[in-house]
Image 1: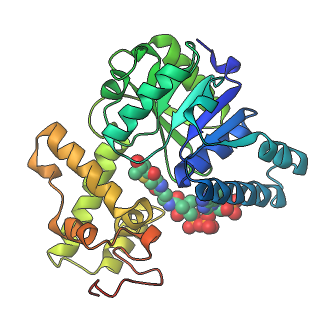
Image 2: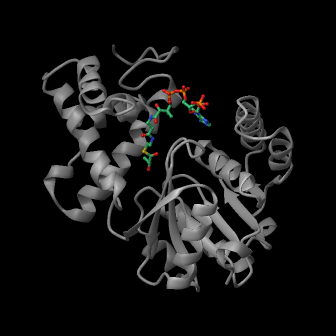
Length: 295
Ligand code: 3HC
């Protein structure tokens, strides 16, 4: 199994916002990156956004021009899981669906070299259950990045029931090599951050739903009163209301306490397709809004 300094090739699966950000970080950390997505359009979009983000850092003097161009060159786009056969570490950032992730882990277990570490960027799905889909549960681990990955300083590392001490140590050091602080969570619903963050977001929806205050005042209250960079409703739009709802459902079913029951307003917004910033409308509007959605 590779130690942190031996992690030279990193596979990243999923070229969405999280996958692109993770690929950027790994390339910036000197790794050869294989960015995998079945959708060629998603891959081209990711390369454009990673290049723009790195060149912005170079323009601000936070990265030399040479380092910027070298990082871009270190990223290779691929379209099949077999292309990850030489990766020392694979980080998946695909859709938050347990069946999809498990199927992927079964495939990864077959095609990657025996020493490879398999990590999931899951925000709430059990790492132990994902690991059980493989024949190498001691080499499966959670690496939970925060959006936007290049900016946020944290990686939450989740140990599955069988994750070995060696794999945990390698992933911790590798995360630090990417310039991140690490916290370690055992494998319980929502881990540390979402266990605490999502009930706050849910409570903000309850406050809006029950008419305590306007969305603007709820957000201003938390921004200015507790120094959060975004208010909880704005943050929910940024994360995606569907993601918030899915994490709350994992907390509710996994911890069996009604305090995690999602607010009906959040459920209704998701039912209406108001998924947040990515859809142009959530709690707030960001331009085009489908006509079926009421103000
Ligand atoms: N990629 C790279 N850099 C980015 C970026 C991106 N996607 N978005 C912003 N940045 C950089 C900007 O270039 C800028 O850099 P500079 O200060 O060196 O010029 C810096 O970040 C600040 O950006 P902006 O000036 O455009 O905007 P803000 O000051 O409003 O910051 C923000 C934007 C960093 C997103 C800030 O609002 C913030 O921290 N919000 C909270 C984000 C948060 O809580 N994320 C975690 C969500 S929970 C999660 O992801 C877990 C999941 O499981 C749900």
